[in-house]
Image (cartoon, rainbow, N blue to C red):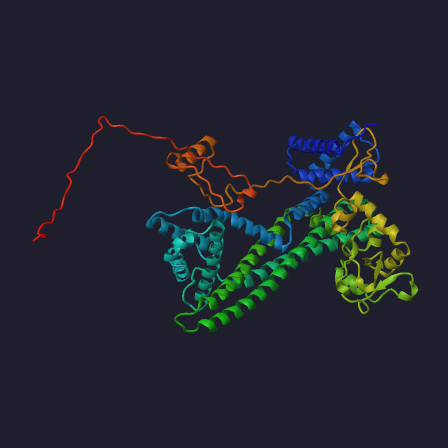
Length: 614
């Protein structure tokens, strides 16, 4: 049996996506690969398109798939398409606080790396070069701290004075003798200390005019931004409430049947505006976290500054061990303020970028269009619906086989993770896709360790009779409306899958019996990594030689055998340990001969004594 490989299946899907992108481009519409991939998945999942994932796709099916996807992508006024675009944009740009701060830190480090290398990799040879390196250190400190512009003369002078107080020019030679990593670490420490000194001087009124008052800026911008987003969210909620009211009447048959043509568009528009509200709530919660963090940083910054003032007071000299830790702590807190500025800017940018995805509302459902539909209708807010149904609660004694939770009997009731984003599943199914928020005060049903809320007591009772049925129906509805997958938080129910496009059933180890004909694609990404050219400082040994004959020549030269005598030594019993051999030159008999043999004779001296005879 011929088996299609996983790699082959992925290539076919890539070809389909590429053809859809080219087709859209030919018709004047540029689309991203991510958007096309999502639309392909949505079209395949929708049972109305009759793409059976348990059967292979023929050429006709593939072409039909391409045509449907192109048609959906070219419908720029479709609320459903705008919702999907909004979801993709938000998923690709929204992340946690720590991820944003880490990314900002990486960008800052990459921008500062050329300046840092100019300091750590250069070896000064004269006084002028030493002075140039010192100026570069001042520039690095200014750029890294973010306290003023590096081209402002007063700021540079102020930073230079602060640096000289902890790192005079006389220490530059010892700094340059350090290894590269040690230089970088000392640069960071100097930056934090100088930053703390300048912040202290600003607080006591001895400089710091170029330093922005970040706490005051944040205290002004956070409420303004929060109020702006809350106003946008209130406007979106008002639009959603109007759509909900019209859809309720249309489902009840209380409006002229000719207006039922608006039902599908109204549902798509309702999903779009509800998704916008969900995203704005997330952003608003992040801004509230920013406000809490700023309040905490201000409190800690004030305490740290007071402790530093009590240590310094009016003293002429203070031990560095007493003040340096406080300067470093001040700089860390100030970097926290800078991080909150970055986060506030990012969240505000994301919220602003969501607005274009709401353009279809004004084009399709203008006030002139909605006005006749809203005649004699009472538009209810979500708060009014909750108030109307709060008194009609579930009686747990009637459902002993179910676990019902209530505010007065459940700890952390308000923080329970409600399924479907708090949407009432019963209303969603029985009202053909109508979104109504559940009222937890009616009672929360715990089923299979998951929690469900309902818009009415009737909805709660009916859902409790057969929860699995409604859960399955919600998933089936999400297949028809792909934007509901994220809106109802059903991503765990829809893993990345692609249709089977081979000529035989797939029997790889990555599939089960129920998953025949489906290729599950893992998440992959193209990444690259690069190491530094020279991790360690360069150290060239000029006396190093790799040539063996050159090494022998040097060895002979060092030995100087012409002036050496071969000899050996032997200690007692050493001959038992190893054989010793010595060699000497044997003695030779030598004689010398002159040209003439001659002798000499010296005079013989005689001593005669006389006068002994008388």
